[in-house]
Length: 501
Image (cartoon, rainbow, N blue to C red; front, top):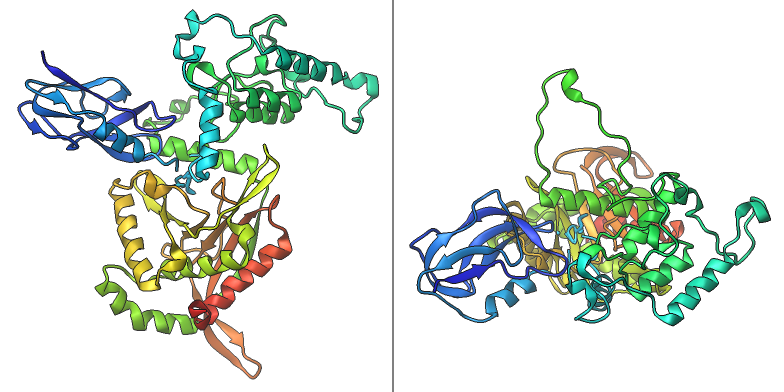
């Protein structure tokens, strides 16, 4: 009997992908862990290794098709399964990126949970997949018995319902500590209300608790998780829609971070049009940036650094970087500068955990770099920047940038960043406002440097000035701290000796 090779698990929340290339054909011999398929998921392009060995019989997929986990990829004439080694390898590649900024690599870092610490990822997986295996979510939704809330959850939900008071009773002002039912408007939309005796939808207890705290009837929320499971993002999206007057969301948020509204007009009435499908990477980038734009109240601080002296040093040591396989670029130098800056100002490498009411301070110096590719914006993460020299960082940056453009960047290489750099100086521009790569709280934008007349106390002299833009999450970072942080970065560029300190 022919052995079947099926698409293995690719990682958390990845259930399918688009086939970019099939690396084997009938008659080929394959070995364990040999790449047999190039697959584009919503986070990255990855190579899928074989978990069987033998001679390929029939290939059941072709480029351009969408395949799901568990789908047969090819059969072997005389192959035998070799265990779970390669499946584990494929799973390891998924470390949740951005993103991008990201990110994102997440991704953006380098998707939305890409850059969470390990503990945060485990909890997020618990919220989405349920508290433990073997739940009703493993059954088809139509065959499940209606789920019921635990008795204590029902009582608590009823207590919260009793606290809600119609706004017309108390007037337009909200009493201190009162839980307001913000979904009252959307519930009155045609088709939106759910029967009061409807079964509780699948959701983790922590998600139900957040919904109750926000005054949301969870039965009104549409779940985007496996089997229709409701996630924290679904509840938050429902709240944003209600506050913006958009009504209840009937599905996952669009790339703009809000429910889709009016349909587009028929552009063909005015001329020829061409429709192209959105790639998985582009779709995930749109979702990640839309989420970051809606969640983070961002402010952008601008400043300029005098890099005249630094430019002389950069030219002097460029041959050394080239011998190491890289280029002595401003981005490579900025990596080292940011590593020192986040050590002095650790809140810029933090993440905000509103569910627990905590700030997570990351004690590592993994820094993301946004890379422009034909597949979209990816965030490659350079690890342990603080412990590496600029020449070493130059070589590593060149390597991951090339992998990103070739579509070979792994999910692990797009995850775990604490702050991101976006350098548009090679293209042009005098300044911009980059979007913070959630769940990070800051991103540094670099524009094109130019010579300007600078007064030195006696006369105007030409100096090479580098525009810098720092976007930051104002919930975590105050404006004065952002100004001090960016000024420290400028000082480091202007005084290369600071880099040695």
